Length: 355
Image 1: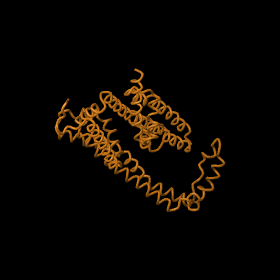
Image 2: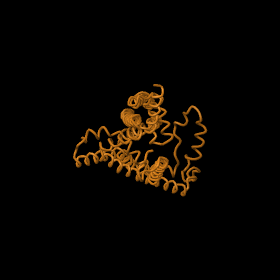
Image 3: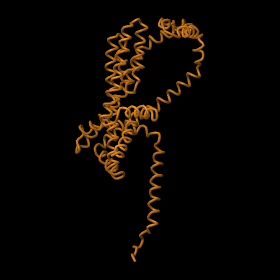
Image 4: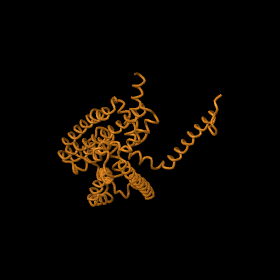
């Protein structure tokens, strides 16, 4: 008969202790996540950006670099990300400030005399009479007597302003925490990457580490597909705006690039530019901008972007499209990167299943 050492738990008690430890760890992790729940989006955004810039970080910071160099590299990369996000908004706000005087003058004239009916309305193929009638009733008269403007009473405007201010403040706070988190990730450098790989392999085995690696590649490919293609679309359409004579072509090109980072949003900008050209009587320029814009978007959205994202993960075009659109619908902007990563997991599991 085997003698059990003194103090050694019986097999039944050992299983109970293991189950209790697992439950305790799970409760503590859930509690910790609940405490920091409001900052999880900032951490996830920082992780997405860090994954995208990790190859650059490894080039700038060698495995055995000095602590001072690691800090400088982390600061430079974090500052570059901050400028990349903040600079477009600064340019838009600066340009808007330059146009404030003209807008105030136009608004005062509209408030006193109303907004004339654009000639474009009379040339619409259908609905022109109904639109003209509504315009004459609500906007052609002085705005202080307009039923539409009277409906926008002060309390509504104040409530909207407060809501917008609260959302903007919350976004700025999250952006600040995201930058701090990103700096810490960059400062940890290759050590963090090695520890994450070891922890993943220990928890889920080699298959889990492979899936994590492919999800990382999916996120990196998605960032390249969204950001690089968006910048390319904005640059090409910015040139088209300048040639067609659209005012503030550089600013519109920047706005187009930002919109193009979201799937199928670039047409909002270049269709608006084409409409302005059409109202000004530049029909050829308007049609040219429309045709060129849709050609650029079709090539970028249906060829270049799926190629960049799919080539890094070997995902079919349909799964890339479903991942981007479904992820955005489910998780918001973060879903643009989470969706393709989840589709990668689905594809890996399918390949293992049919192997």
